[in-house]
Image 1 (tube, rainbow, N blue to C red):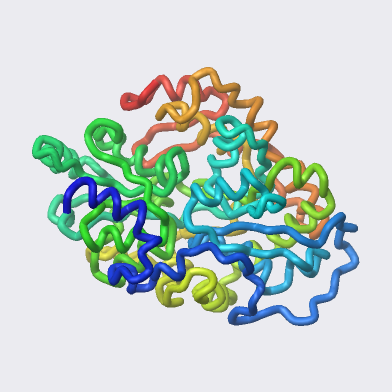
Image 2: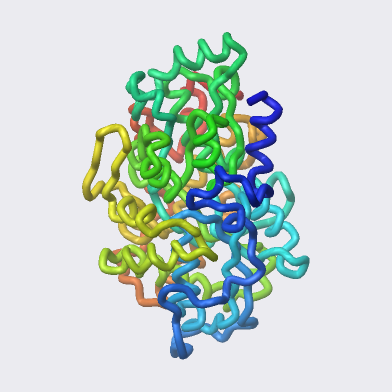
Amino acid sequence: MTNLSRRKFIFTASATATASILAHGCSAGSNTASTGGNSPSAAPAANVSTVANAPKVEVTKAKLGFIALTDAAPLIIAKEKGFFAKYGMTDVEVIKQKSWPVTRDNLKIGSAGGGIDGAHILSPMPYLMTINDKVPMYILARLNTNGQAISVANRFKELNVNLESKGLKEAASQAKANKKALKFGVTFPGGTHDLWMRYWLAAGGINPDQDVVLEPVPPPQMVANMKVNTIDSFCVGEPWNAQLVNQKIGYSALVTGELWKDHPEKAFTMRKDWVDQNPNAAQAMLMAVMEAQQWCDRSENKEEMCKICSDRKYFNVAAADILERSKGNIDFGDGRTQQNFPNRMKFWADNASYPYKSHDIWFLTEDIRWGYLPKDTKVQEIVNQVNKEDLWKKAAKAIAVPDSEIPKSSSRGIETFFDGVKFDPEKPEEYLQSLKIKKV
């Protein structure tokens, strides 16, 4: 396959409805954005009554986008189990998006322009939209921690590529010398998966901007691209890493909870103007999402959650591709297995839902590191503008979250990564200066 045709495949596969490579659980039909999202799924809510503590909402309708990833479950469950309706938001649509750029573009135009009002989103994206696209956004909650993976093609097993990426360094150098650079799939430039991949490569002495090629690929198309050798590795959320292993196409070098314990991942974002105009409706939706997060984290609900999310209008994959890693049972695909992994995807446990400002400071610092944001970005100022932890706390009290589960600080403190590097949110400049591989 020529370089041109390889690149063309990455960006156009979703439009090729008859491509046989998409037949294995991620058909082109499953990747198109719907305009609804209201038809019943595995366990629909029926005759849900509004509860007494529901805010007096200004509107009952909102459009929320999601990508087919397990960490979208809180929005899907809030819809399907009736939590939105419970708090007065009876006409919420949860609409599948083709890719993160499509999610961004639909947020930019808003529902008034045929787009969406809010979304399940990569945590850095509301900042990139606010700063670069001049579309002010709010982060209302973190949707989850952990639950992503970096997966590689089976041929890298002999190089012992796992939590350490240094086994790829020689292979990357040789491929570059042969003018066939190794290609690594990420979901959105400057997003979480891009940052996990960059951190992992750089920790092994591989410059992600010089030694390899990073290619944006929509999450549901990762496995298809790996299958035809268009990419050699990818970083994405579940269920796509598990599906890759189940189809014996590649293996997971690591799950991201190993890279950074209980790291922040997706967020629940909404347009600033929508929230400002409809504060009670925004609180109602936040209450519903937080209750759905609690529901999703209960072990007795995992099978039902996966059954609902596997439906064609949501993920269009086998429930088995979602379930085990949701439980923390990981088959890496290279002989390693992990049962009850403590750093599995969490929706509520260990303050997973709380939008720590310290985590957003790290995301912005990394986006400065790699040139996605200017070095003079006023990090603390923009974090205070976008991160609405005050609204989270208000919603938490409204749904009677115990005080013990409401963080007292905006910071989770100093974070330590797998390679021993520490990030002090009080001193982001020192962290940035200490990193050997960077653009700035």
